Length: 236
Image 1: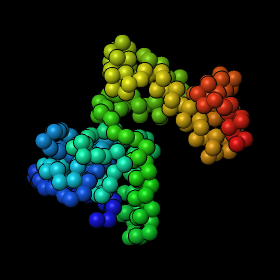
Image 2: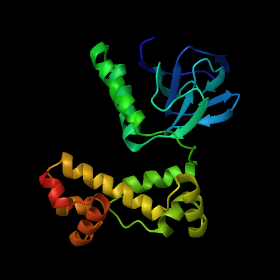
Image 3: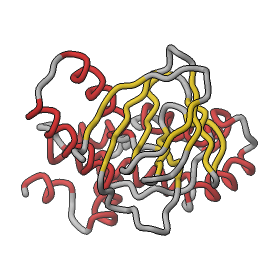
Image 4: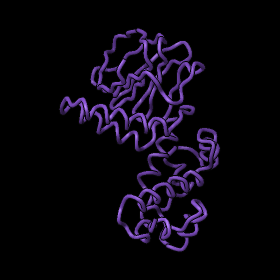
């Protein structure tokens, strides 16, 4: 079977089937309700449900909901012990899904579609699925990404999650296996690295874009994180 990407919609009437390949369903708009022996619930934009080959599943969705569906003969992190999983998607994958939708609706181009599948597989391989993250914490992650250049406080993030600061820190660590501040640092450093490598922004501007008003503080943090100063990295 060829590895393929497609855009699909479903109906409110529950349907069920199996297939001889692995399948990933990634909502673009609306949610899908899915039932399998080991999982029953909904999957929403920003998430993905993995359906193992030959796994019977029941599903339904509103007619106006839209999904990217990836039919794949092989997935890097799948073995026979994996029967299902629902996991949150990385920001690059979420953005890439928008491109997939627009391209597939625009034209038929087998060469480009194969390239899209290759890129999809690379993005997929970078995010080994973990436990499903709650909508509250996912909303906080999206907020951090959107407002990375601003001062991100625990109080502000807790408000986004509709939790007390103490509850927020506890829930965030339980679901991500790291603290909110360490997570923010990780996102900022990876963003800074990408900006230094792929843009012509000066180091000062990169520091500002990832939330550091003081260049020396940014340089110390970057050097500690990557073992190389921003300027040295930029030159390489």
